[in-house]
Length: 239
Image 1 (cartoon, rainbow, N blue to C red):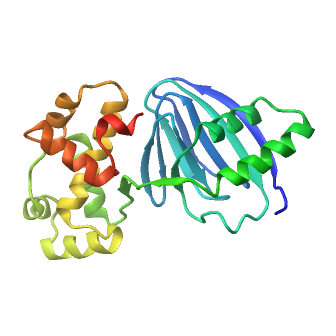
Image 2 (spheres, rainbow, N blue to C red):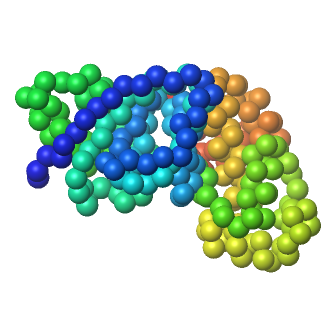
């Protein structure tokens, strides 16, 4: 396997800083050495704590919002890499891959860079992919409902109530929601709640507090919903 041209950079951002919608000509791997980011693309939205990395294919538009102060370590990979995903993904990365990304950001000598590149490509063949937290919606009524639920994830109104709110037929809303997200309304609302929950947990809010803030009546019900959506418990997600 030929080695792609790889360059690395280190950037620090303040809490609340927004990296506006943009794209790169190269493939990109973004890792938060410290801090937590929210990344949005045309496909959806993820929350990225330390221990994860974002894979962003070349020329794909995206934006990054810093939920806390963030120190990013980024590598760009030039050239065709057809064996890697053509869509955004968030990866749980090994300690070795984390150190490789950090070393590239420190601009290693050319001789060392070749060895690091070979190690990086090897590590990219054994990654665990995180589930997408929230898929992007495009229909105007769904966009309005999503914005309202993001502002108040504890809102317990059902589909019929929301349909009346946005002036659409419940059956039409359900059809568009399935077309755009593959989810029922309950599943979609839970995804929105998990996005807000993950952001709150990343900021250090206790699990019990988060559970009530996003609309769950018990902590155990929230933990089970989190596990079903994210594949692990809130305590383990940030390990």
